[in-house]
Image 1 (tube, one colour):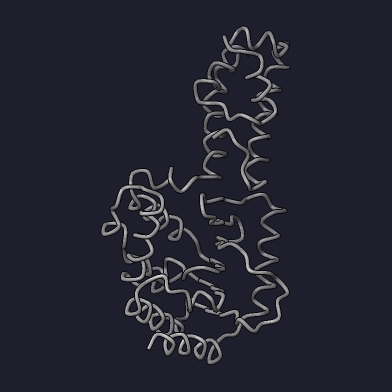
Image 2 (cartoon, rainbow, N blue to C red):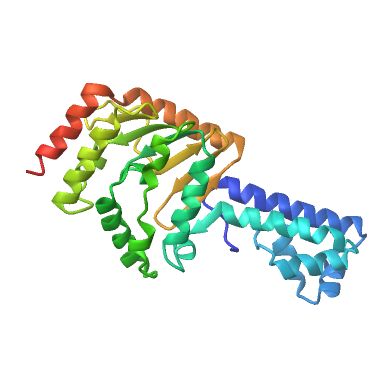
Length: 280
C-alpha cells in the first residue's frame, strides 16, 4: 500500500521505517540523488520513501541496502515493512481468496488472547454468532465485496473459546445490534436467543447500551482490544490494527466510557427479549 492509513498507528510505523532507511543513506555518506542513481530510479521515488508517503517493496529495500553497502540489514527491514503493511489491511485484499483463511487467522488470534474487550454497534461479535446468522452476514459481505464465495467453509465453531479455560470476553453492544434485521426473522430469533444462552457463562460479560442511555461517548466503529496490547478496528473497507500506546489508550478510555452506559443482567435480558418479541 502506498496511501496513508486512517490509523495513525500504521502511518507512524511507516514513518519510522522511512527514518531507518534515511539513516542508512546518511550513514553511507550518500545524498538522495546519489542513492537514486545507484538504485536506478528517479529521485522523486527516494523522496517519497523517505517521507513515508510510499511503501517500499521488498525489492526496493534490498536495492536500497545494497546501494548503502548494508545488504545484511535487508531481511530485517523487509520484515518491518511487512509488519507495517499488516496494520492496515483492506477487506477485499484479505478476502481475495475467500473468507475461510481470514476466519482461521481470527481463530489463531483469539486462541492467543486471554482478555478481550469488544464493542459493537452493528452486529454481534463473531464468537457470539450462530451459524445461521454468520452465514447471512458473510453472504452479504461477499456479495458487496465481489470476493469468492466460500461462506459454507468459513462458518466455523468460533464460539469454542467461550467454553475453554483462560479466555475472558467483555462485550458491549448498542441496542441497535439487537434490532437490525441483518438476517431473516428465524435466524435473528435464533441469534438473540443464543445471546441469552451465553450470558450465564463465566467467560462472558455482556452489556447492552440502551437507546435511551444518556451518551457520554458517541456510537463508534466496532473494535476489539486484545490483552491491552492491540486494538483491531473494523471499518467498511479495512481492518486496522492499533498498537501505538497513545492511540490504544484512547480505545481503552472509550471502552470504559461506553461500559458506564451499559446495562447488564436482568436489564440486558429484558432488552434482548423485547427485540425477540418485536420479531413476532
